[in-house]
Each structure stands twice: as C-alpha cells, then as structure tokens.
Length: 280
Ligand code: NAD
Image (tube, rainbow, N blue to C red; front, side):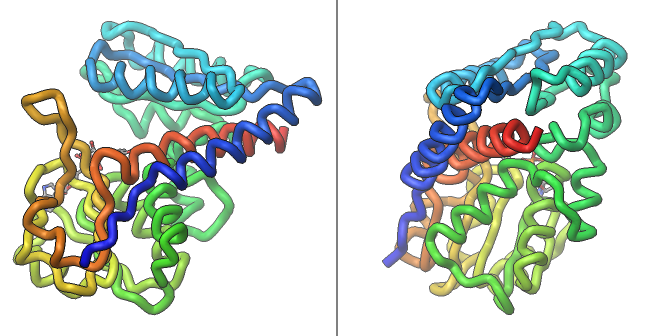
C-alpha cells in the first residue's frame, strides 16, 4: 500500500511554532515583517501572493505586497529590493515570478540582502548552500526535506533522484539531500531514458512542471515520491508531475497535490522570516 505523505499537519505544526515565536517577538517590540515584491499581473502568481499574505496575517506576521506593476523595469525592481534590504523593519524579502521581459531573476535577486533572503533566491544563498555554509534554502526545497523528515524517511546512504535542476527547486533540493549524506542523481530535460535513473531511487523528487511525467514505468515498490510539480488543470484544479492514478498502490509513499509540498513551503517561508526577525 502507498502511504500518502500529506503536508497539511506538518504545515500546521510549523505555523503554530511560527505564531508563538512571532507573538513573543511582537511583545518584545519587533513584529516580524515579510515583503513580497511583485511585477506581474499573472493570475497564479497573484493567487500565491494572496495565500502567503493570508497565512502571514494569521501567524502574526506583517506582510507588505510591494506591487510595482507588470511594466516595471529591472531598475525599478532592483531599487525596490535594495531599499527593502536596508529597511530595518523588514525581515524577509521575496521576489515573485514571473518577471517582466528583460528582467533576469538571478541578476535581480542578487540585490536581496542575504540575511533577508528567506526564499534563497540570491545566487549567494545557493552558493553558500552548496559550500555547506549557513544560508536560507529556497522554501520549496526546504519543504521537500521537512516532509521527508516528518515521515522519517532515511536519507543517509540512500539513493535520491531529483528530476529538475532549477535554481529554486531542483538544485537546492539536491544540495540539501547531499548534506544529509544521500547519493544524489540530478535529471533534467536532456536526460535520456529517465526511467533508468528514477527506478534506482529510494527517494524520487520531481520538480518539472509537466503533468503525467512520472508514471508506473518510472518507479518501484520501494520508491518514496515527493511531487513538487503544480500544474493548473482546465477545471481550475491543480495536479502534480506524477500520474497519481498510475503509481498509487505501486510506490511506497507519495505526496498529494495539492496538500503535499505546497502548504509546507508557505509555512517554511514564514518560519525563515521569523527566524531572521529573532536574529536581528
Ligand atoms: P523550471 O521550469 O524552472 O524547471 C523545470 C526543470 O525541469 C528544468 O530543470 C528542466 O530541465 C526539467 N525538465 C523539463 N522537462 C523535462 C523532462 N521531460 N524530463 C526531465 N526533466 C525535465 O521549474 P521550477 O520553477 O523548478 O518548478 C518546477 C515545478 O514545481 C513547477 O510545476 C512549479 O509550478 C512547481 N513549484 C511548486 C512549488 C510549491 O511550493 N509546491 C514551488 C515552486 C515550484
């Protein structure tokens, strides 16, 4: 039988801890504050920002949505990130994607002060992570590890396969798994015979953005699958990258979409913000 690795209870636990710390900090005169810089009118981005703001409010964290508009220039965005980076009232900064044409994410994220980089977007953060130095990992990559720990999935010496190599998910997830002494293989768009790799996995992390990419031929009975993909469906729902109907019953564990990695990601973003507020 396949274990469902839901993220809802874990997310609740993290939020409870965050709420308690935020209340303590507020009593001490420091209310944690997160700034979300937006330069798009993309609907799914707006949905995600609203959900962060709502969760922040419930946890006693101030959340400023800095909406620069879809026609903001790279310079506008850079200036905003730089100002927030030096604002002593702001403890966390996120740069929301997509960005306007001509604006490069990594280039702009370099303007986020590393200690406020709660979503690990600054290339310095990824570099520090790879070097084994303290840094905030992107919340989604951190959520993958938090889920594996929550369900007590062993990692040391195990074979982990990450599908996807983006700077926000695949690469940092691979680094975090390496830190935990897993043997890590990273697959991507140009990988040939993907199933040859994925079938070796004790833990399979999928972060691509293609519904149905992972199906029965890609897994074995021992595979624990973390599905990071979030793909909107025609009827307004959300599916992952894993063909849930095809693999459920076959694999050892599977995160649902929605209700798996997503809620844990948002909770960890807030946890990182409160952590930095406590430090400052
Ligand atoms: P991305 O487009 O930046 O990267 C996708 C990666 O997949 C690339 O490295 C590419 O090489 C690889 N890829 C593409 N086609 C492939 C194929 N056929 N076989 C193997 N690899 C292939 O995407 P991203 O930002 O890393 O996001 C990945 C997915 O995760 C998306 O669905 C996104 O919506 C989702 N996501 C979810 C959360 C969350 O909190 N749940 C957060 C961030 C991203």
